[in-house]
Image (cartoon, rainbow over all chains, first blue to last red; front, side, top):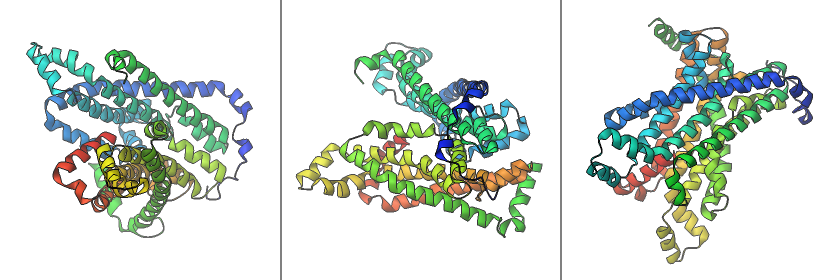
Length: 225
Length: 235
């Protein structure tokens, strides 16, 4: 490894015949990537909701949650995945648990900030109209917090799509597998394919979520936001 | 508990603290890649962000760059650069540079852009010209956000410089990659702790720098809360 590979020519970056021969592998990697991302964001959301509601209700819980977010992002993601191996082995759950931890922390922060950002006047109006706490939460606060919550889902999704590639180093990498293949073969095409597809995937997912937000918050549209 | 003892033993073993693959040398290598990449990125990204903020041209790019940056797979970039440039410092520098650019551009853009228009007009009313407004009003007022961008980038860069080890370079990532290859958990955990500590120290040090470069007028109480709210929003 110390000698390194001979530098390749730019013309070697894309060998179309390789892509043609490996379409099935590429499709499987892409599917695994989508699957891991989807599951991590979904699990993150399921866990983040009760946690956020608790942190919203009891603000004292919020500071430790924010603090752990900060610390988690200073740990190299590779290290986090490796540290999970003793507990879960080289299985898909290792990747999934690690990825979910990242989404969870991003989501909790945005859900709590979204709920906190609801105008006090609106909240008081709901109370004055005799809304119960639960009804106020589901019919007033959550809908108004939706743009901030969806912004969190966007960040979590795009971050996860990037992080999935790292999990290739512990054997479950989706498109990251293409990076490892290219590294092993010392051949650029799989790497380029992996980078382009994961960037496209992130871009598409982000756009889809913007579209979803547009659908879910019709009141924001009429104000020409 | 066993793992904790092993990690402590690994971290406190005198042999780890000397020689060419000892912790001090690895830390210096790690810092060298990180500082170099962040400095180059800041030199490129700051003028771009400030220019966009000052003129308002290209705002869409500046706003979306950070989110776009999250989609860049660092592992892919470093391996691709490795197949192109071969062994050397170039692959890790390019990777960290690409990682560091977006937060600095976006934050310096938002910082300059969100300077109160009244303040800008007041400066113009006092007879300042475009460049003077930029240097004497906009930049000082944008400084908290500019520094927030640099801090975000620097912390990410320090955490990601770990990947250098994957393409045969040094740095603290060696302990992670070698430990993974040898199934030596103590080495992996020890390495991870060292990188996390280095990231936290980076964050704290840059926080200190921030209090030095941010104008006193901005950090007095009332103003402080407003700025902090803004910084948090952008981060």
